[in-house]
Structures are given as C-alpha cells and as structure tokens.
Length: 257
Ligand SMILES: Nc1ncnc2c1ncn2[C@@H]1O[C@H](COP(=O)(O)OP(=O)(O)O)[C@@H](O)[C@H]1O
Ligand SMILES: [Mg+2]
Image (cartoon, rainbow, N blue to C red):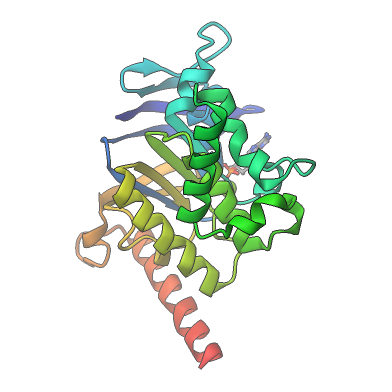
C-alpha cells in the first residue's frame, strides 16, 4: 500500500504542492487529474525519490521513502516503477531493445540468462511488440512502440505499483486508446496498483476506480470515478474539467467523421 501524508514541496520559496494526502491499496488505482502546472509531475518525482519533500511522508508497505540517509533506493524501485510522457531517455539509444528490456532484470533480479530471455520475450509480447523488433535500437521504434517498450521495461521486474505520468500525451487518439486498453488488461492480469497521472479526464473511466483532482498544487477533491458526473456532489472546478473534456471529445469526433 502507498501512503502519502501531508506532503509539501517548496521550490525557490514557492509552494508547488500543499498538504497532499492519499493512499492506494494493493491492486488499487488512483488517477491524479489536473491542468498543466498543477504539480502532477512534481508529485510523481517525490514518490520516485527523485526529489525530496519539504515536509510530509511517503510510505510504501510501511517503508519510508529513500533519501540521503536511508539509501534503500533499490528496494524502492523494485516495488515502484514509473513511465513518463517524455520517455525518450528511458531506453538507452546505444543498446538493442532486447538489452534495454534485459537491463532491469540484471539490476533487480537474480534470473539466469535463459530465464531473462524468456521474460523479455514474455513482456515484449504482452505489450504487443513483435520479437523481430528486439534486435533494433530504440531509435527505430515509432512513438506508440516506444511507449509500449517503456511499459514493458517498467513491468518486467513485476513491480507492485506503476506510476504513469502523462504516458499517452504525445500520441494520437487511436494510439492513446490502444495503450490505455493495454494498461487495463495488464493491470487486471498482474494485480498491479496504479497511479495514473493525466491532464485528460476522458482517459480515466474504466482504468481507475478513484480520482484526485489537483489545482495549483492543492487537492480540490477525491472521489470514486463512478461519481465523476454527479453534478450535485462534484466541485465546480471538477465539473469545468468534465465539460472542457466533453467539448474536446465532441470537436474531435466532428473532425474525424
Ligand atoms: N525545478 C523546478 N524549478 C522551479 N519550478 C519548478 C520546478 N519543477 C517544477 N516547477 C514548477 O512547479 C509547478 C508544477 O510543475 P509540474 O509538477 O511539472 O506540473 P504538471 O506536471 O502538473 O504540469 C509549475 O509551476 C512548474 O513551473
Ligand atoms: Mg507533468
């Protein structure tokens, strides 16, 4: 279980995140939704110990976030993996895709060479990448293939929690849909916990059971995804996000039909 308590982050005297609190149970799925600049990526970086909080706590299965004193980074990343929007640096351009996917198995598991090969084949197939692509360098992959490879690289060591930070934002709508469907089936298969970060509310239904709306670093509200459209209950800020998403979707449909 991921537990986030009274998390604050100040950068250059500015409060980027204020009093953020939530939990994700084993197998649970939470979407963090907010406009650009609302602090979503900062939150992801704090949970990945890439930045340290100004105050507050992050725990995973009772264990504290690693820092300069508690150097348990390896254990942390064994359990929690992340896929980014701008993931161009996730796969080493000088290695083959096979080597890129094998690397976390070498770093985090004691699997033997043959077992690693089997795991690489299993996960590339799981994310829909043909075996022939494994010989290529990552630079030769299309945008959609690249994000699939990043997902495979994150999932291949069987983490308990996956953080996705705007993972489909650079893809067209058809590819977005395919990756989201893939994520849904993988989450079900692997019993994975999911923290899905997005500015696009339309991606969330069917993927996450809970939604936390973030505005200028503060939590607006948190609710069950099934009650997203309950006008009487939702904050007016959330309703505006819903309406602008619907307008964008309608405009898109008009454009493609
Ligand atoms: N290293 C940094 N230095 C100064 N400001 C930063 C830094 N990182 C993030 N910010 C600011 O924090 C705010 C939240 O950024 P970010 O977490 O990237 O938001 P989001 O991912 O929701 O778009 C923004 O106003 C951004 O300019
Ligand atoms: Mg961001």
